[in-house]
Structures are given as structure tokens and as C-alpha cells.
Image 1 (cartoon, rainbow, N blue to C red):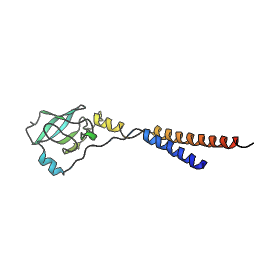
Image 2: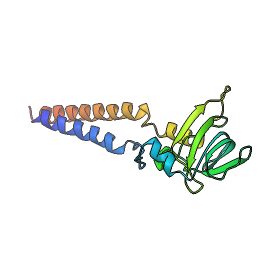
Image 3: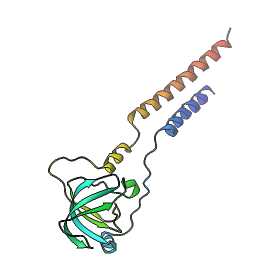
Image 4: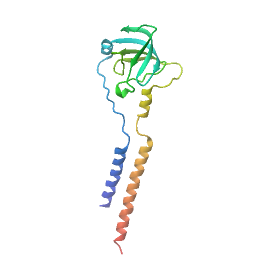
Amino acid sequence: MRLRALLVVALAALGLVVVMSPPKPAWACSCVGSTTEQDANADSTVVGTVSQVTDRAIRLNVESVEKGGAQVGNSLTLRVSPGEAACGYAFRLGTRYRVNSYGGATGVCAGIRELSSPAAATTPSVATAERTRAAGPPAWWIVGGVTVAVLAAAGLVVAARRRTGRGQP
């Protein structure tokens, strides 16, 4: 009987840790279609190097135009969501991409291909920083959960021994 009570409390403590731990990000973006379909459906397809990254847009220095009205040598600003969970893309400053866009916006499902990375290290984009922060619960949650479970089990053992000890003369 005591063993069952101990097991129930230990499981409840572990369950509490699971319920209280920070959630992982929900990925709401689901891409359908092949690269060929993405290219065919795009309003614009350009090759360019990222010259600016904000939390809502990027600016590309256009090197070539495969489709659309962009001009070689000009810069092109495209709206992009701040994270891949919202179908955005983690553009990196100074990196060269082939980018499809629809109505002045692009994202992970639009058809983006990285062509080359910059030689020197650059500042990561906002989307990359968000993905790093949302990677999962920190290790201290696991250690804290195990500690809570062990303390709960020890408390039950002590309580059970005291109860048994009181009944004896």
C-alpha cells in the first residue's frame, strides 16, 4: 500500500514537471509543391546578396533577374515573416540567394536557395535568434523535475515511517 502511494506521488511530481516545462515552438508552416512549381508560381525570381535584414523585411542587391520587373543593380525589399514557424526564412546578411517572391513577400515555402555564404562571420538574422531561443527547455528544467520527484518520494517514505512508528508501543 505504501509503495503504491509513493509511486503515485512520484509520478504526479514528474507529471507536474512535464506540464510546467516551457513548450516547444509550434510549426504552423506546411509547404506543398515542388521547386519547379514554386518557380512557376512566383511573381518574381531574382539572384542577389542580402544587404539588410530586419524582423519584417530583407533588402537584396539584385545581381540577376530570372522573372519579374526587378532591375539588375538595384536593391529589392521583400517582406518576410520573422521566423520559420510563421513561414519566414532565416536570411543572413552578406549571403547570396536565389529568391522567389509573391506580391512583394517571400518565405520558406516560396522557393529560396542559398547560393553562397559570406567569407567573414556576420550577425545572424532575427529568425535565427528566435529559433535558437526556442530550441527547447533548458537543462535545469530536467534537473529540477528529477529533484522535485526525489524530494516527493523521500517525503512519502518519511511520512510512512512516522505513521508506522506512531502505532507501535
